[in-house]
Image 1 (cartoon, rainbow, N blue to C red):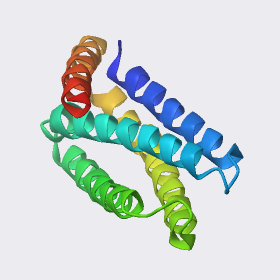
Image 2: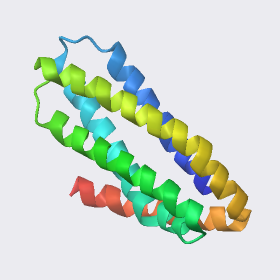
Image 3: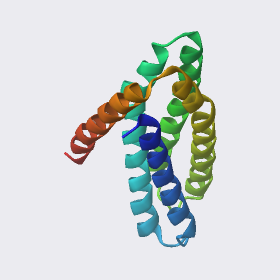
Image 4: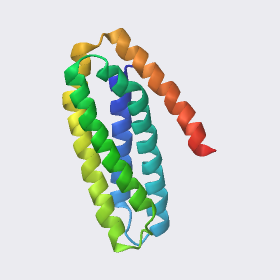
Length: 151
């Protein structure tokens, strides 16, 4: 699958999980914990694959690729920090909802920027075959990472 289509599919999955979380009662702590665990896993798989496969491919292209990747990596770092902070909280804790909302906003902003500027840069600077190859590598890496997280 084309890398950009694959990453957009991941983005849609996370947005769907955010929506499911939003529709869950604030008093259903078990369900909220379960959904947060799914969201965390999806984001971890996605960001690691991007950082290990997609972003290095863009950085290799030219100076603009480096700038875009640097900005995206900063956003990933912030999301990782939020995931760690939230994972240490009980869903009954008032800070849980505040941090979770911050996570949603940060991820939404990152998705907008990535699907805009970064994907446009990739489309302009990569051939369809290169995007297919990177997509295949991302799929393979995510499968390996998924098995590691499950262990």
